[in-house]
Length: 415
Image 1: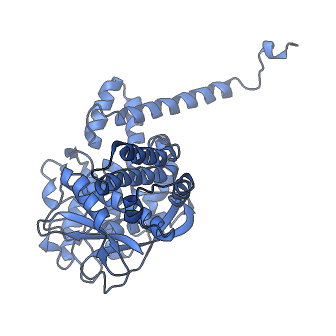
Image 2 (image 1 turned 120 degrees about the horizontal axis):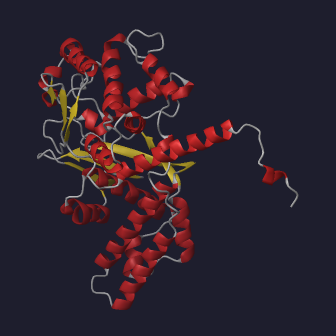
Image 3 (image 1 turned 90 degrees about the vertical axis):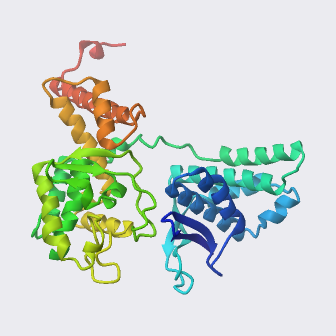
């Protein structure tokens, strides 16, 4: 059984390995590929880890089919069409996490995965097959370093055939408009996180912290990784400002699977209410948590145990969101990232309601800055276009409603 192990180097750099969990040993070629082709090119750790998980899927496929990849490629025996079809079908399978042997995981953070009968999305299968094709191309050419041109061409054809089997990849932003909470859902959410609410699922000791998590995501539109990386030093209460800083491979971050900020650093304004929520949590709640003073990460673990006072993990963050989501059927699909989409909907509505309308280009510029996107990346334009489409639909429906049941004369005439 194969999986991904995560570890922290002495320099603070996060790294990962593809590991055979039956013996705890790393696999040579997959890890050589991750190092030589990705890490040495300074590819982001999150990307390397994603590639590692795709290679785990490929190793599972080879293992299930009894294929010794090195032996086959050494003999210049390439995959046949029916095997590539089988690979395509195999990469549709969803992986679920399983507990691992603690004797193996003592030195690393390990993730044991097992195939389930559920299927992944087209986008996930697309990137899996892309990663496998790229790895297979590198592996075959590395193994057959001095092969004749005709063999190299066969390798290229094989890898192109894998890519040809990728499903149609829906644009990642196609359904972004549907990933927002409407105002009714927001009312439910704010009642759930209200301190002392009968619907609040959290104990009193973490209600302020978990409320603050939701408020920061909603009011600032920041990513979960950015939230988990906020340090108290990033907050300027004299100016009511919060600095979002990109931090990678921090030595004093105790989390093996450390969160990363994917977007640009920026300075965000804090409203008086949000600033007070932050100040109250830091001075009244966080300071009481044992060991919390040993670091200045804003959101820390309150639960007793070896990690108490340390910055909360990504898993703990997602658990908070999952608990909130389970309270009401109206929040069944909520995610932390959905609040970022909701912020963008609210921003569009605010821009639309202004007496002096800003140009679309200016709106894109402001939105890009607040979201941490590179100016001109096109992401902000997608939200503008989605909002325009939504307003167009609303106007069309209102026109139809105002027309009542009247039917134009032309539709009553005989053909």
